[in-house]
Length: 195
Image (cartoon, rainbow, N blue to C red; front, side):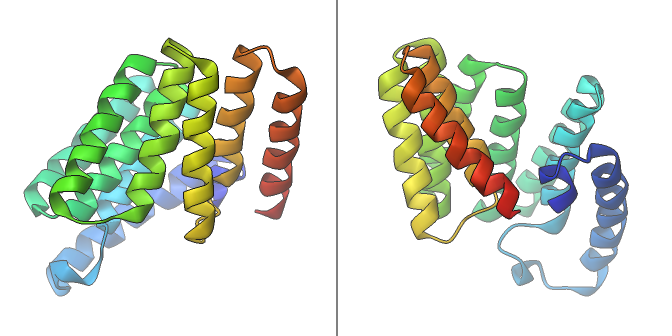
């Protein structure tokens, strides 16, 4: 995951493929209740994005399908939430705002059905905000993105901070607020340097 965030998709791909192999061996020796989000689901979803960054869109989508299949088979909300979140991030990267909006609604429905999941609520806000900024109203999208960012910050989630602030900068740029966009971009860069 760290290699992905540092912009090294080839390294990340190698490690995630090893992780998938190791996680599959955990299935034979561990309780399914051991992890909130299944390691195999996470590794498949993260690998999908790294494959996308390497230009392998079809292979990335195939890995997402595998992650969805596994999450469904586990019948637990944590893995299902994780794969929806990772699929939304994949779709953001290819600019599919309609699909991100759909996934964001699936996320909130799962959250409302299965428990509080504050991390998922934060992701729902910033993903819905990104889609709204692309499709409808950049300023309203920006507000949702910042709401999600602030929720995540309060929960101690730092790994997606630079990306989320990048979404905020993009939304303000779409709204013509270049000063605000620059401020958010500077914040995103500070977060990225901290990783």
